Length: 183
Image 1 (cartoon, rainbow, N blue to C red):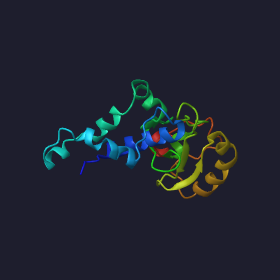
Image 2 (image 1 turned 60 degrees about the vertical axis):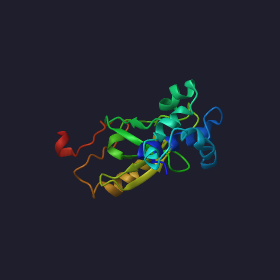
Image 3 (image 1 turned 90 degrees about the vertical axis):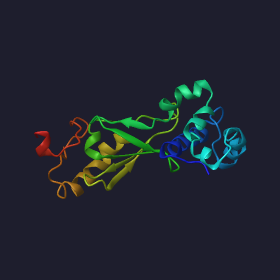
């Protein structure tokens, strides 16, 4: 009956992640807990049309104690800025939060920021220039040292217009091809 906007769904996933990782006082946003709050949330609704006006994301934010509301974006950010300057959305729909980003945008980054106050590593899905998964890691430093060479060997021939440096730790991150970046 309520309208769950994409923003409300994303907020619920972030809150569920924090509840699972940190427990109380992060609110329980499971189905049963939310159903208990329906009378409170719908107190002013008299007609079906009133239900469409209910701000579900606002109601979810209202569950947060002040201190948790202040820390929400720090502990479970909606987006993470990567070295290329892009702000990439974090996916909280699975068991662990995932940042899916093109590999070239992460050159020079030795670690993704941990979430939940440093308790949960962010899983990085490194994508090919076509946006297909090339590797998955929660330890970027280790990937650059041990896994990157194999990924580079496999994809360099397929995507020759994109940079594939020998040393990704010192390379300049980019969203562009070699031609458009001036390399």
